[in-house]
Length: 290
Image 1 (cartoon, rainbow, N blue to C red):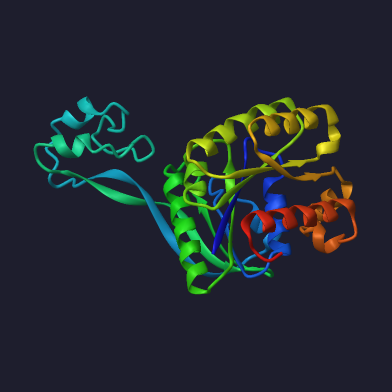
Image 2: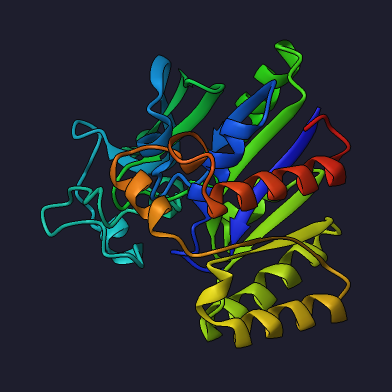
């Protein structure tokens, strides 16, 4: 089984759209949406949920009112001001550090795991899909990404899939690192803008730090040919291969508005042809059947 993660240095480059269309072109795969903070792969893949489980990724202090002697030590020690004037725990402010639990003289406090998201195993038209949703304001998205990825890897092995295709998060933070950990290759989707180039440099530096092979695709490359050439020049300098150049097209916008994939709704379009060429290149890089 080969593992490919698709990421981007910034949001809005078209990473998820590219990933969804690659899923439609590939065979014998498992799809994982590891963008748990703001998932939108389900909008294009229309998954039918088969299994769902609660994710508990954070701890919060819980008080036993019968044991509490209201000495005020917890309120005095808490750096997050999570203990109210009437000695109740403010769950929104509580960071789960455990200091109040360790110092409470009457053992009235303990840490408990709280529900911070949901993890799903679903079926799409093209492949089984593992995805998740972190609750608004919840933390530990990196831990949830790891759970999504682990479950997807386990299913891919059980079902003898040839490819695990992972849609990662934008940026270079913990969720991105969790999504690229241990994969065979990373596809970075960028765009021909100054911010796109700057963030591409950051994310490629991150991928290099973990000694992972990376390739690049330029989405909407023809909107600014000058910066596209800058991106190509930079990639040559650091010996990173450009595996795709996707043109801007209203066809793909229209397909997205209808919740469809352009490789299916407009297979003869230039952008669909470019996506197919991208998949051919990726198949060659991963040494899998295209």
